[in-house]
Length: 65
Image (tube, rainbow, N blue to C red; front, side, top):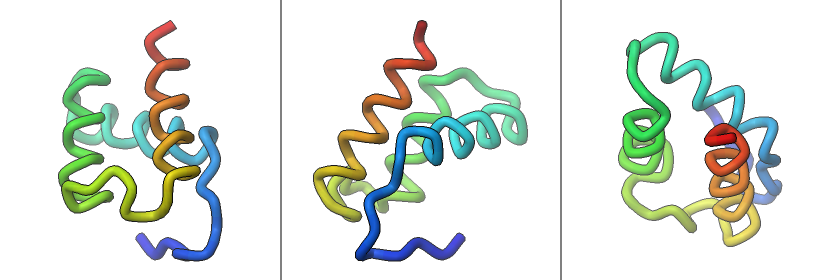
């Protein structure tokens, strides 16, 4: 997946991404969160900037209910 480093990734993007991970890997939200941090962010949640990192956290929290 190609990501534009100059753009702020929105919570909706991360919700879709996490949902895809959970579906394809048949795992929980916590599993998808860890997978995303390790693979998408390459271990650095602020790899694509603080705003994208906050959007990721917001998406995870909103999916928790």
